[in-house]
Image (cartoon, rainbow, N blue to C red; front, side, top):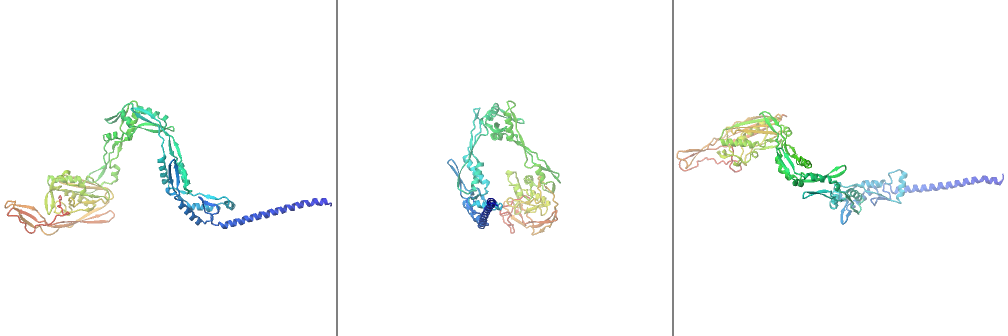
Length: 618
């Protein structure tokens, strides 16, 4: 074989060998690079295991190389220290400062640290490796997030707006000397609160001192001059002639001058455009309405109760009527915008009574719980006092559940101005004398016995100091000015109604409510007698010889008790004992013989009641 052929045969082999060596070198180089990268990654992983990677910061604060807890502590200190860093807002010569703490800024430190930790951990291995490599050449800053107190922010923005806002002025109408003219509006300049709020929230979370110009926007008036023509025409019609207002047969006339004084303007949307419209203002017409209010009102009638002595039922309320100022002003506006028939009717709205039918029904007053009657003739003046006191006692005759009835407060002072007359009453130490209001204890005793039989809780009751035959034994109830009183509580679950009537001789109280199943039984102890009445004679030089006068009839002492047992629907019961005792009073007879002497045994008993003379009816 020739040398040329051998040479041609060996050439491709050499080339293949050279290419093989090149590939091997490349593979070795790639392996070295991969190895270096692997080593670098291992070193990087070791350096930043469970730590924030190099190049990572939060709001400019580097957290590189810190563990989660270390980063949290560092960022917390940074946030706390920066809470007073202010943002300075400027507008011309005006300046305001706002610190994060001023608007209750709360920074989410935990979320920021978690994001910083996850910068090189949140994706797959290869993506995270690339991010780690890049962080050595270009850092990553994590922004802070959090919340602000919306109310505090709004207050701050409104404070700035109050100082800077120049609101637009709508075009309007002015009435001068009976002539209506168009008044041009003007544009305004107001704080752009939406934009400013967003800017502030972003800057607050950076925790950096910075200066921020307050953004302003130009605001056009809602009503332009070209949109006042309808109002101009309407206003001219309104003041063209008087307007009449009627209520039944009563009427009033508004002059053109008054119409002009009561006129106002508002805007309404008309095809997307704010148009000025005239109207008569109820606020401006208030003095006029106040003058006619009473003349157009109709009084309402409260719900009440009727009864047949055994049952009670609601008599429905009757609504009243009162002036509706807004609606009446609107009716006058309609009339004033017409060229003829310029008359409006007063608008009256229903006025609910103080006690509606539904409210009365809900009180549950339907059953007679008890009734009691006493009779005593007495003098005409005593009868008058009894009738008057019965009226006062039931003026406010509804008692709510748990409410206490106070007899003395209900009847009030016993004075001539309130109609009371002189009649016999107990004035102490067994004496009967004419006093204002004599006889009123018949009323308190009658009411006490009705309450007693109804089984209601009695909180105060006292017997008379003189025994009175015409009352049931042990069941009288006296009242004195600033002393003894009669009180009881409505201990049912519903309202009770107290009805009282009196002829002055015969007095009756009836109590209505919801019968709850309670029953009442009573036991009278009988009388226990003490010392008998002593008799004392005294001389009186003002009486003629042989003349006698019984000054005090006196009484023997006695006492008793009455037990009342109230048994409730659940089977439980309660027993109350009402004690009564009457002291011994001597019979004192004056004899018109010789000089006045006081015989031994004359009573020195002081009348009860805070050291004052006690005056009671009987």
